[in-house]
Structures are given as C-alpha cells and as structure tokens.
Amino acid sequence: MARGTKACAEAWYVYVVECADGTLYVGIAKDVDARVATHNGGRGAKYTRARLPVRLLHTERHADMSAALRREYEVKRWSRARKIERLRLTCRRGLRRRAG
Image (cartoon, rainbow, N blue to C red):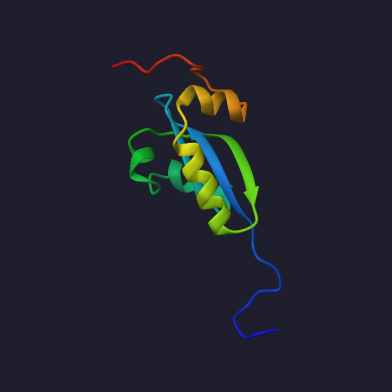
C-alpha cells in the first residue's frame, strides 16, 4: 500500500437538521453526531448559530466526499416541501410557512 493511503475510504454523510425556527439546514460530515453537537454548541455553520437548537432529521451514507457534496447540492436546490416529501422528514412545523 502506498504511503499515506487508507485501506478503505471513510464514508461521508449528507444530513438534514431542523432549526428552532422550523427551517431546514443541509450539510455533509464524516461524523454526523459530532457535527450536530458542534451546531448545537454554537460553533457550526453561521446559518444554524442564530437558529439553535437544531434537531437531526435525516442522514444518507455516501462512499466519498465527492458523492456527498453532489447529493448535498442536489438536496439544497429542492424546496422545503420537496425535501419533506422526498426524504420523508418529520418536522415539528410540517409544511407550514415560517412567520415573516
């Protein structure tokens, strides 16, 4: 085995969290539980920092970072309703629109 390579590639995950204001956030991580803890500790994405706490709704396993990034991009382009329908999410606020 060549120096610096791994025996097998580590999996990457696409995850969806629901923020306290009912919005959905999509991201990728190797360790989803640690990433959600980071979000809830106020050290995650700028978007989630102002919308704490977050609740994990969905994860998908992918073979590598590239595949996870492609899927993240695809899901981020969907409307909220489509995310809920296609990923079979159970949100606290369902399909209702956010106030404002």
